Length: 342
Image (cartoon, rainbow, N blue to C red; front, side):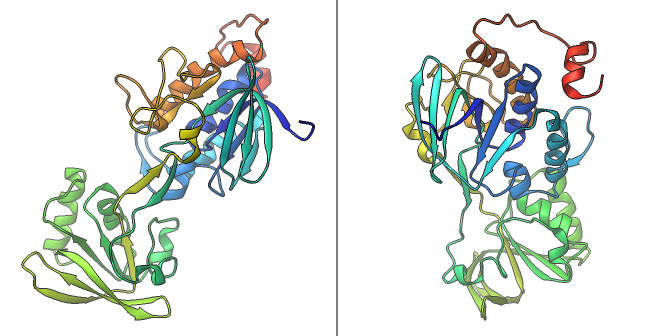
């Protein structure tokens, strides 16, 4: 097709793993375009916890989700990747050996030698609490993620949930909010024990409130929350004042069209072999949270490792006649020239 965008590699997903894949591919002279359903790069890091600290990136004691995204974008600048945001891949067709034609819901067509799926868990949506009329408050008083902590300064904040997200934001927003109430359906939490201890200490000192039960009703007009009704486990009912609600009920992950691309799936994940993280379709790779293999750990650092090995195998498809010589960035003048540091 004459209007097809041609590239060596098409990466589906612009989260941390997709971004770092650009770097590994670029070192081996492979150009990449990236497609993401979100309207910005960074994946879940930027969408769900841009200000939440991450502690397990090697060599970086602490970095926020947005900070990691910004650093990765800086790192891949020498390779000039092209981003296509707010688009979803609908169709992947084989047109050669290797060779793929990829079509998005915006009508864009790509032709490439290699496809890398780095789509996290697929497209994701927060689970909505079963509270009548909650839709009227979404985006104005009810939020499913925290993008800017300052937005919650001096708010009467109701945080609902018992996992890490609920506890983390309870602790992080407590210094900013006028008052924080944490609500969970039982007095037992799935979050890190240290976070639970900190929360209970704040409750014991009267600096925040803990309620056990479930929200059954919201009060307020014109999308502005004024309060919530809580039904407790003993069937008693109380009403609390709140002007902002943060429900953390987890995410619903949807593979979407990935399930129709002819790739073998296993429990809504993409099984791969572990020498290069290639799928059941030669030339299509899967890295990051979307893949599965024995011993898989859903860590960003593991996705970085997967991207590095993927690039080695991708080189064979893009440059079948070219011998690949392994080099280190610390000692290779040619790699340093590509990075602009020689």
